[in-house]
Image 1 (tube, helix red, strand yellow):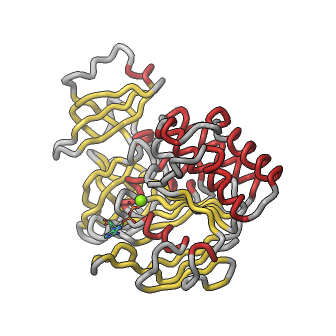
Image 2: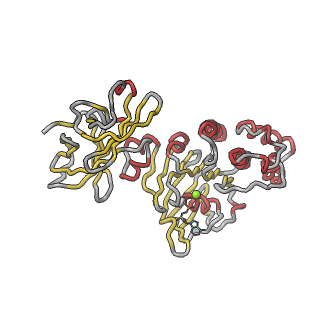
Image 3: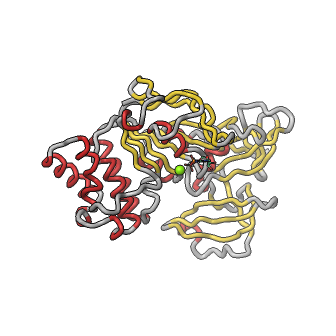
Length: 362
Ligand code: ADP
Ligand code: MG
């Protein structure tokens, strides 16, 4: 079912946590709301679930205004960030509870509980009590409790945050498969951009209670609208190098890059280049002092400092630096083969994207 939020505002004791949020979620979308801690994600989900009354604004589910309805009247299933399982009940009964309340037949309940337990790899725990489980196992029970239901919309608040990397990876595939099967709207909240990229049909980036940008994972990665999104989406994060643009060009190290924008006389900008876009080159335009390197499989993440102290990261094939001594050396990088982003330093907004090969010496 579709979900719409209009002018949603929440203040806690006069402090604004959500600031006039407008959001439309299409039927069947897997929408991920991505934002760092404190950006208002849980507050937004709680308003949609009906657990929190907004200070201002309306919430619609399937076109109906549900703002004044109780949570139980909205038919949404929510996985809580700080969920509580019933300690005296078995895992099985925790998962089955809502189905029993709804009066489903015993066989139907068993069938659904077993299917979800199998998908989430908790079958062998069904007869245990929650306290006999690890944090990650309990989290999967919390997820199972929502997935077993048949609501209009699923709301999930950081349901994978307690899992180790391998299990989280498996759960991501499980969630995707689940969504393909049920074909229902899922609104999923997390702070991890990898998780958002892996799951979302669309991502909404939230910062300080406001929507900064919304789009497919590809759109956000390829066309970040602001410095914030540029540095938040993509890992390792995009390099942002302070510079000055003049007329139709912007300086990047010892080169100037032609722009179609006329920047007039000296405008402060940030030049964005992804770490995978920088390569080591003897005649590279960016000169930086080596600081340290981090192995990332076949790639090496090389971290160096610009003269002003700004750190730059370059992701280079390990074979390219084999035998080369990086310690205590001055490195030269080039962005010639990469896409480059120009952001206005004051407004922090994207001004221009420049495709590879536009750099030209004076
Ligand atoms: P997120 O889930 O993105 O971490 P929250 O929605 O939990 O963010 O919180 C958004 C902001 O609202 C934060 O600044 C947080 O401190 C504040 N906040 C959340 N819940 C309450 C509350 N019950 N009372 C007062 N302030 C709150
Ligand atoms: Mg939260």
